Image (tube, rainbow over all chains, first blue to last red; front, side, top):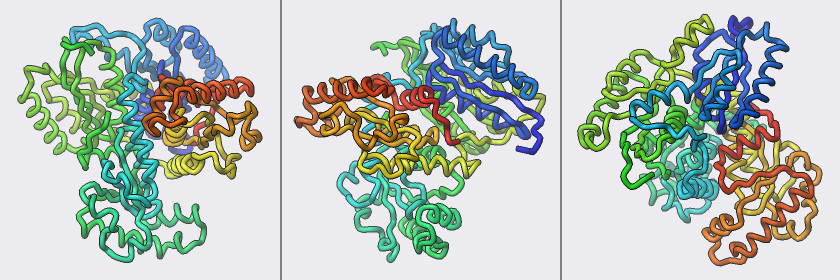
Length: 280
Length: 280
């Protein structure tokens, strides 16, 4: 973003559900523009005419306050209910409606009428599916320490790496988003004394996936956690990372560098590389 | 889904990034059709012509195998790179392209050219933002037991409820998706002896948010965990839930019923109701 963005717009992400998808899709489009400043707000659960009217009044107020600074507002929406959508569309804004833009043509393609009922995305439609997901979360939480190998046999995948390489959030995301039972094994200094696989992991070699990280970044993360410790020293970080990577290479353990990757990218990448089956 | 769906289609979600958003948007559209069966597959990181060609060959193979059963395939995609997108569009399928459908008009509206560079959605563009999120995950993991009130002052929100009401996954989702520091306080049988607020929570009354659940559903969840225990008995579940809800009402603690809600819905709902500020 430059000092004086040439584009300044308010962007409203409006959904009759959680808004998570609309926001993400809208942001992906906005991210395509350089030298722009977007003031973004998300409004979920706009599923009645009353809420729609209330929101429009709120938007009108914001625009009246400083409209000259921000230009015509952008509205990214996904609203299934016709009545609610029509109200939102009366707002003097530039509209992108992810539902309305496609549902008509999709009806033609499928020779069927859409239900036009506020949908099941991110909703709890299938209890069994949902239970599988929660079970995966509990599984991942219960295998976040490497202390027990009880149930490692039940893991879909075991993430291995030095402390603070990104294993825990990646495990949790794999569980929450994909229902994958992801266990987590932190390589301790003891483990790193030898290049042999930790004893506990040997029976599960085909489930291992390594995570590694740039030593400088690791040093910064550890410094936050235990300032000025041996644990956080750059020298120690360099040594641990090098040894862990050598271990991965020696035992043919696939691995990823987490430094420049988000948990979403790491999780999607691991899912693809390991051809893991989602549990829902 | 009926026994003999009148619509049977393969649906491919194709993205040059994680595919999470494309999949979610595509599923929202498909969920609008009853009596339909969709065989869904997601292909992330299709960001080079080679990968695109390889994917098309794979799709052609699948369609050749049992195409007569499944009709014309549906492709939902979001591909920024023109070359890659053009290749995908040569596939004999019904296409919905979330990027291409909007970017041209958005360029006109903003009087600017899109970067046409594979984007930053779910990517690690801003380290500070990302650190805030990981810090929130670590915070939520470190406050998942109600044993310590150290740092509760730093929590953005404290979820309160009986064991297995859905607090832990909701906390984790709040942290992962929104960077919210969500702590978690399970109401123990001791806490439920009195309708008074647990001592540890009293200083943080304005941060409390209750989660409750249908007793029958709770009984099923607990039964899985500790079969035939007092903990899992319907009688005990009914009593704990009733007492917890009474506590919420008495102390004006806002609360949600988790029974029919996904973690995404719970998190988005709590964010809105509590007017919580995201940390990124």
